[in-house]
Length: 210
Image (cartoon, rainbow, N blue to C red; front, side, top):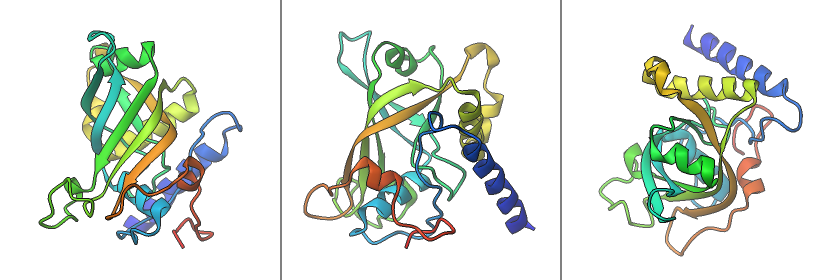
């Protein structure tokens, strides 16, 4: 029964994406990555790391601190569990500095670590074998209604509490338009990975990494 429900859910999300024109939801392929990929497969590893995480540190240019960088712990989702799109979506309010900063200066970066997933064993979070990724780009307000609907479905599937957040706080959907990727998933320095490789890794016809 759960499998049937999941298939219906994913079909609905694919319908939402498929109904967009070429200028709307700019995201990667839906991927189902159930197990930790080989670190040599940078694209699969990066997508796995983002898809399984639910929070990270979002950095913006502060309007209150004379342009100093400002990091903030935020919840996010790039799609339903195990069906990530590659693009992180956020549910933010201008009562918080992060959203206010982005509306004045869109430059931002977003960092997540493997450590919260529990797959680093006894490694320190800074150890290169405990992977981490920083996505740099533009933090933009999502004003397309269908993309915003997709984003809310993605966010609420991981963060059900969000649905009950106060309407008066005017939470809105933001997304990070990725321009650069910094990935550490093993020893030897950052892995070369383009945005196109990250968003469109090699997959099977069913959306699984090959």
